[in-house]
Image (spheres, rainbow, N blue to C red):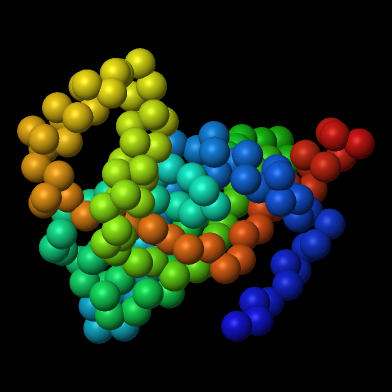
Length: 165
């Protein structure tokens, strides 16, 4: 599919800056086609790893049903959101990706994704702690989803461009 170009291309971030936002972020919003054709957007914790977005969730529910019905998704991370009342604007920086969501069936990929999530959110915990948590939390009931990225873009407020120049 061809994606429409960014309207304000001068504000676009390059690939490295966009990936840095995805690496720094701790939460993003996943947007899917939900029940009855209604948009369904849900905030979640994630990791950007090996060029994909990974997250985990329950094996049943609105999110998984939506992914099974239509795998097209978008994901947005806000990196900066500084309200500047005197200028009636916001200095922002964000990244958005479009891609296809899939339930990770391969056990090696699934464990790699879970290790990447653990390294991001629990960096001081040991491998032994990770294994115990996976056993206790019932990894069999845990669903890992990968968002295979087809388009990635980042954008920042024009005021931030002026500051950098």
